[in-house]
Amino acid sequence: MKLRGLYAITDSQLLAGRFLSHVEAALEGGVCLLQYRDKSDDAARRLREAEALMTLCERYGTQLIINDDAELAARLGVGVHLGQTDGPLTPARALLGRQAIIGSTCHASLELAQQAAKEGANYVAFGRFFNSVTKPGAPAASVDLLEQARAQVKLPIAVIGGITLDNAAPLVAHGADLLAVIHGLFGADSAQEVTRRARAFNALFAS
Ligand SMILES: Cc1ncc(COP(=O)(O)OP(=O)(O)O)c(N)n1
Ligand SMILES: Cc1nc(C(=O)O)sc1CCOP(=O)(O)O
Ligand SMILES: [Mg+2]
Image (cartoon, rainbow, N blue to C red; front, side, top):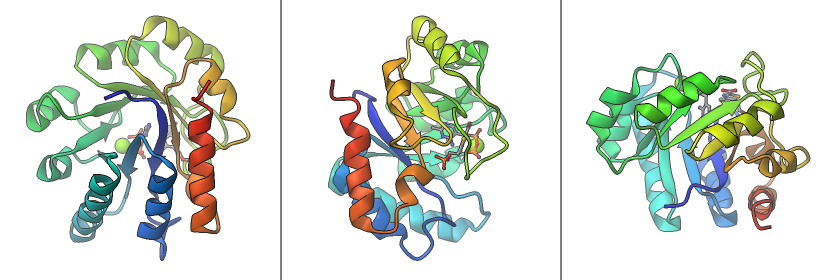
């Protein structure tokens, strides 16, 4: 499966009261990967929501990725995204199997990306590229770094952090394969606007 296009990431606070309707609206507009990102420790709710997302993803032919939690990903038979403090890739791969999509946060480090590639990641993520409402303290990355990564890293590259329809095009032009977006997608007031934004993000990959 080609990893290229919009990578939608959920946020439990932002989507409170409109979780499934906004996610379905995004899927309607086209989503390459959907990440379930919930930083709470409410395991029962996390399982329930992840299962609901899996049902939606199956209907739309989208791959579901669980943030942080390889055990939950294994339980559902889906992929996982691991940051630098979320545990090593090798045991996650052993747990999830060869087919699962595993992504790795590399901040602004080519060395971390090379390491992730060696350990069998399916994509690497760099960020944050812009000011992020969701994660203001994340370390910064630049378009120069993205260009170097494009030249040196053979894996699909996800970019993240403050990405909106107004600032995403140069990232695609400099080699990003996946636009990972929370607020710039789900911050919309209506489901129709979420669908419109999803279509517009994907259109950036058309040329
Ligand atoms: C696609 C993508 N890229 C980066 C991250 C950030 O992961 P991490 O550094 O583990 O931070 P948290 O998201 O867990 O707060 C991500 N989730 N997805
Ligand atoms: C979860 C996350 N990780 C980042 C990183 O740089 O690693 S930035 C970020 C937040 C992304 O949300 P938004 O699109 O609302 O800025
Ligand atoms: Mg994490």
